[in-house]
Image (spheres, rainbow, N blue to C red):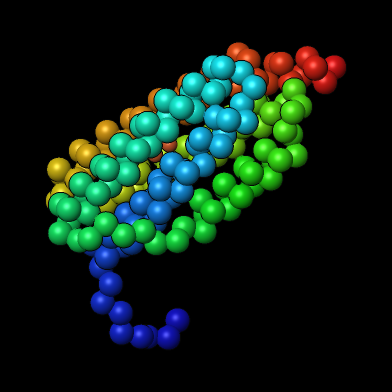
Length: 170
Ligand code: FE
Ligand code: FE
């Protein structure tokens, strides 16, 4: 690797990743209502609606972390979440009106949650590393909700969406 002068630090990396997840959360706020609308089962719809209001809080918590850092809250395009959501909307279009639509929606939503869980886990580790325990606590509150959502979606996938899709396909 060529030796170039680069002074970037873990704090820069933390701030960049914060911008990445801020962009992602705002995009998820726009996408969840479409997913709720596309859901067949009331249970799946209300899971998305519940997580929409949590996601609005996730955006606010990130703003709090930017504040702790003394930086303006700004997003930075996150190609990873763009790709996950793009794939989700493709699947939504392909399975609209079919018995597999809820299974498709739950699977897409879980891909989103897993991305967020990975990101928040990393951000918490770095916040602690940087001695920013108050920021770590704020981020932990969100991580807990992402994990609970993932678990709820797993239960929905097993209990309703997947079995129904399989039954109808049989
Ligand atoms: Fe979130
Ligand atoms: Fe989430």
